[in-house]
Length: 85
Image (tube, rainbow, N blue to C red; front, side, top):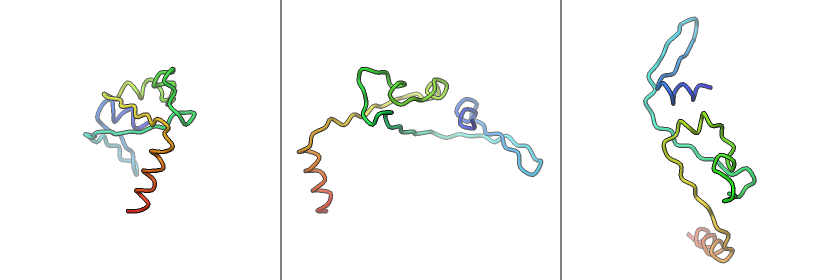
């Protein structure tokens, strides 16, 4: 997968019309993932919740888990506020 090379060696190799080139890839990658069953299970690890392979996960420096605690009244108030804007 091309993202492996970009994250590990900071290069991208391409071949077009018989010409082969290796380009520098200096970038930051921000990724997001949803839990497998729709809700984050705190009894499981991050990797088990999002099912991302270990080689890909090892390339990231930071992980932030954002958990939405169900609160019907607060969710309704937020939705009404957004609709009324």
